[in-house]
Length: 339
Length: 283
Image 1: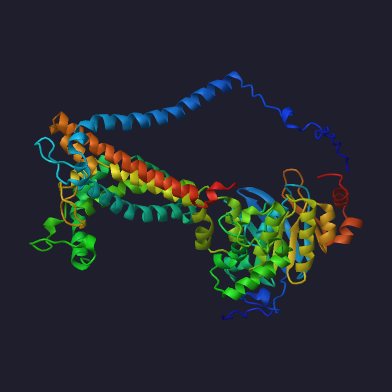
Image 2 (image 1 turned 180 degrees about the vertical axis):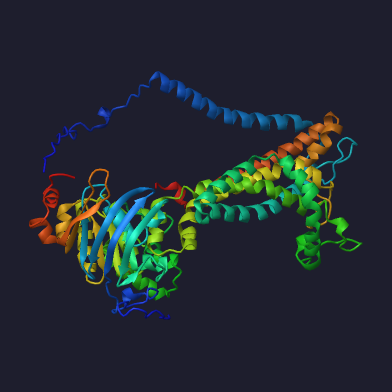
């Protein structure tokens, strides 16, 4: 055995009064300074962009907001150019309804898909599926919209009718139509647009969740396996607690896209300006679709009103994301501990 | 609680019983016959024959990269979790093959527990929940009082009860490294294994914690067969009854060079390489 020489540390105990405390001087090299500058510049740019967008919307929408006053939140119709009232009391609920329908479908599907890819799929299939999910996430929403319009919509209305006929006791599925539940009333509904929006949300949610699940610490995973854990046990007690932040984060990213989705919703809905619980029958709306539909035919004042609506969407999205990040930071997620 | 499995006369308890509380619980013997392992096309272990007798502590020693840990992981089917890992040969627990479907893999791992080199308590669980994690993971139902008994008895056996009895609701990660490792031992004991595999359990710990864990090993070895990988020669001498010395020549798979009672391996080795290793001349 060799003896390892140990240098004796100098006695520091004598010099510990506060006036001798050293203020460490950091001298950065040139490269480090440049990198630091670029990185902090980019970070600050994020804040500037946020401020600029919010400020711009507020400035442009201010004229309309001044005229509408609180009515902007309580009025349902949208007739700024006709000198009428305008407000988001109907289109905001519709926007949220579409997003909720989309997430209601997308989150469970994305969660199971992500778990299948990371936990159950054979290695080769895993690689293929991961690539395909990433590819789907990159497909422009117009493509989903067109496919939804021409292929899915005609097929979905049968499901809509079935739900209206058999689950009408649920307030959301109740259809009150004088002609009964004929197929003709279902195509342009909140439900159909929500389903189509969910299709474009699923890949994004899945991609985020899969990435997080795949980073679950191998030590904990093996620890769970070594205790005789079933696959589901490992998923429930290791993967899901670890991935909680990612599940919420992925869902929020999806919600952001669902709230702002324009083209698919514009293609599907027939604009309505009366808020309602029912999601199956025709007539729906969304802030993004409203802006897209009205933009070209509006006067300066009409555009100001649309900007105000855009501001409302911007604020809603910020609030939802702030709420989500609070949940994430308060959750005792394994993601915050070292591996 | 139902007991259904009485296939082998040696299998004393059904794995789904919480038999730590059951005096009939008995250690099981492990037998490895002609085991070889590959990672991809690289053969890392060859021709390993080893008998790990019930109620004995077997130490696996040898320099880094000689296949000790790989061999240990074949003993409870953790080896196959590594992508591209393959295996040949036969491993029997009380005469029953663990690889060929006679026992479900989750039962294999429950009967043959494992403690890892790096303490890995579940961060999202409290100390108490960590102890019970194995029951939850494998879907076993227990009553409240059974759980309380199990928490106390397992933590006591792991030598941790006195330190954590007032902190059972703290997160497992709040404990010190040595305490975390003992928590992991308690966690393994809770599913009443017949064999406990330990992969350098003390390599990240201070001497006091190490001593506590060695004490635990000698206490549990009456009812649980222990197989321990260690780089610490003194530890191997202190805790083990038998020793197996692994060695891999350059670019060749690891083999067992010599195996026998610990005393013989250290004082009277048959092979000169064993003699060199245990006397610290290489590795």
